Amino acid sequence: MSKSVSIAVIGAGKWGQALQFALSFTLTCKITSRHIKPIENFVSLEEALKCEYLIFALPAQVVRGWLEAHFTFSGQKILVAAKGIEQGSGSFLNEIFAHYVPEDHLSFLSGPSFASEVMKGLPTAVVINSSNETLSKEFAAFFPSFIKTYTSKDVIGAEVCGAYKNVLAIASGICDGLKLGNNARASLIARGLVEMRRFGKYFGAHDETFLGLSGAGDLFLTASSTLSRNYRVGLFLAEGKKLETILEELGEVAEGVFTSAAIFELSTKHTIYTPIAHEIALILKGKEPRISVKDLLSD
Ligand SMILES: NC(=O)C1=CN([C@@H]2O[C@H](COP(=O)(O)OP(=O)(O)OC[C@H]3O[C@@H](n4cnc5c(N)ncnc54)[C@H](O)[C@@H]3O)[C@@H](O)[C@H]2O)C=CC1
Ligand SMILES: O=C(CO)COP(=O)(O)O
Image (tube, rainbow, N blue to C red):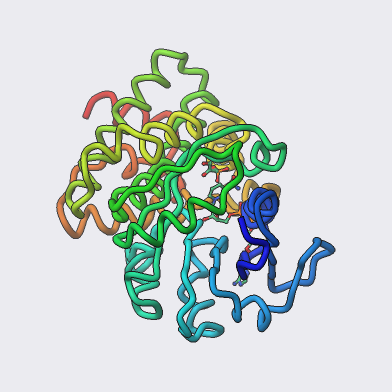
């Protein structure tokens, strides 16, 4: 891979830094963020925005404001690495980016990929999703050999999976925090997969996406490991901790908190049956987790 490819990661949180680390095996990858960080190839935002390829690793909830404040399209090719649905508007990230970037310059990253494992060079497999297959293949070629890349055209499917699994990871953390057992967790994850497929199908997602890396792959990962911030939020909620305290102590983004509200809004508006996400939204507003479990079992 030519070291002359100009590429930058926007956002130097956990995922942004892990992606820069991974891509640095094949090319010189710059990185920028709102606060200067002592990272190799850290550049100003101005310099990053001049790159031909940009990877967005900002939390989903801040993407719209960030684009409005900082971004002007000048031919950049974009890979969106965030996983979430915007609370309030219920907008998917591809809808938000579409206001600023032509569709054929946009791609979306999905699949099982804890930043901490990528940072250790441990193997995984991810998917680059775009209506423009040439663009997907260009980004796929930038990844190092320890990350196997697949391409797909199912942007909405990948987005729904990446966002929904965070809500289901909170549910799974609650299930384990309440010590409901392995049977209960497997039941929850399986029904969660059915639920996120039902939700995604409404928006045009393809069936096979739910069975692959973006769907089952990322869901199984996130809903069964304390490495997941969302799963840990669930564990602490089950212990009776206040959400504000949990988020403060976490110090990193847990997208499922906001996405559960977005799914609640979207599924109410479009009459989609999403019982698990519904209960998570209520728990995050203060409902007792044990009552939610009872309600889910009797539903
Ligand atoms: N950490 C992981 O393992 C993975 C994370 N993701 C997704 O990547 C996205 C980012 O996650 P992380 O990097 O892990 O979160 P993080 O909490 O580690 O970092 C978020 C970064 O965004 C910056 N930020 C927050 N608000 C901002 C604003 N208004 N303007 C500019 N910068 C702002 C923060 O300073 C921070 O550096 C999320 O959507 C997450 O779901 C996806 C795959 C894996
Ligand atoms: O998306 C992830 C792994 O694929 C990271 O999940 P968490 O945000 O729950 O840590």
